[in-house]
Length: 146
Image (cartoon, rainbow, N blue to C red; front, top):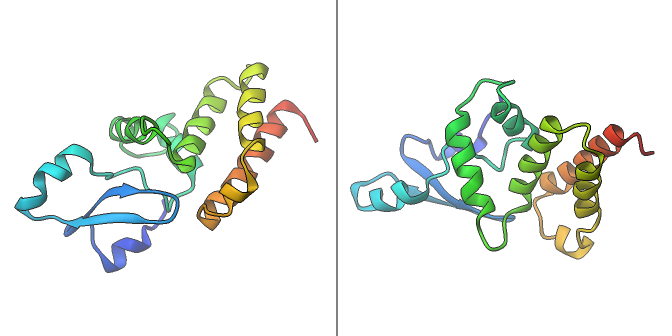
């Protein structure tokens, strides 16, 4: 399992993640006044500090976790008009595991990742940039591309 460093300073019992993007997270204190906001969209499981393949393994039943809640949170993240790249990486890794032999699908995902604007990537979290490269290598390995 992975450790959420945020938990050291802002424990989940007191604070809830209600939003994250490529540079920030919004946390709200767990108080009655915020309950409506928490009910609408707390991210309890989908954590941008964890490797995306960790979430994909939970979704696939290969790692312990809360897959139903994770799928719900991932859907919410992906339904945003401009979904977070981190959420796309989780989705891509899950799809690659489900459909490893669908070459066309793998090529489509690789084309998406290779088509990301380097200037846009500069604004992503350092780890997300590294995970993009890692996922590209993984897909190339599945496709047997050097």
